[in-house]
Image (cartoon, rainbow, N blue to C red; front, top):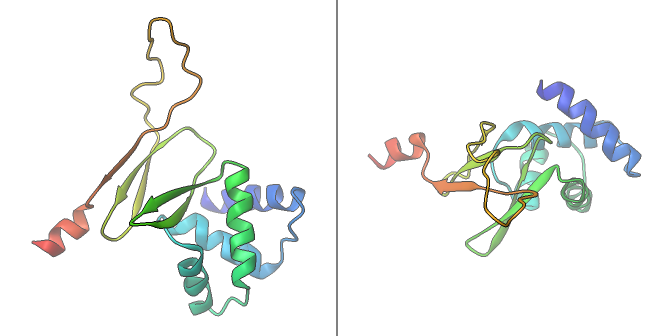
Length: 139
């Protein structure tokens, strides 16, 4: 499934004018599959550790393009913008404030909610806390 997502998003980025070189595809695949909030610099460092040769400016450009296409979301945590890939399907996030792990939740409990005198066109709901792994570490 994630591989199909990489192909689909690569095609969308290419249509948007970004040449999809092998390093860019590898960087995109890491961003899509990591499931952690990352700053562009952290993403760049993770990519560099895998010996993928790509510039930091290219990472910023890719993340910005994904944001414009609603395929990434930014969160300001402790004054720093961190990004996560967002599949196009409606979903929520559980975000660990310790390790920045993100879990997608696709079951929407409010999709059919009716509010008198108000027509909901979209909504966003995310949960911030400490994941089970981090809770165990803190013992």
